[in-house]
Image 1 (tube, helix red, strand yellow):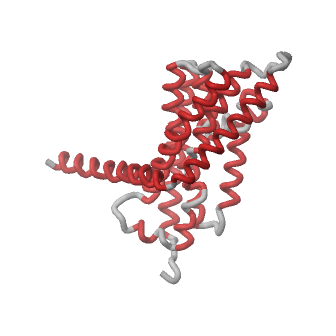
Image 2 (cartoon, helix red, strand yellow):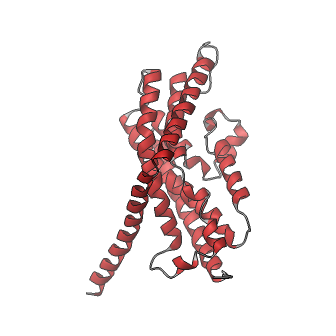
Length: 274
């Protein structure tokens, strides 16, 4: 009987977080202007990169690791939807701590960090669904080639979703530093800049200097965007499994850090003026 009650309790806890995703997903529909601007940005940036890399490879004399112009263009087509879907809590969460509004969440029957995670994932999934088909259409129309296999697309879906979770957790972890730091924006800016270098957003890590590639091996940043895109265009089971294990370990480690931050931070929280 007790086991049955525990099962029901756990089920309803999960159901609450799924409801948070649903509400966040549906609320994203209200911001049609933001959606159109995001799609326009995607269209412009992707076209720029298509023309850029086609021009770079057009002479036939330039060889960049194992990349062709088609593979390089498809790499960016797969990176951009993930980038546009990135966590909204890169900018938002610390305001709740500084204003004292976080106190409203401490009395509710759910975990505040998990609420932030699922709330962000709802909008991230919506943005990805809106951006991804457009990225595919533009890139296929430009290259007239499909730059991935079915296995590659499946690995991209799995690693991409886990990568968005990882990116959201890192953003939440940085925002929770607001318990101790007045302004976390500089830290967030550093994180976003590092993603461009160590996360493969600027160019694939394969074409980076060896020292950058070695440093990236010791950070979780490569798993947010680089690993899903590379696994899609150059699918191998070995790389997929390595990236999957690395992403899951990184998610678990960041969750532990967030739990520790929130446990300590919420106990030293002082609210002035209500």
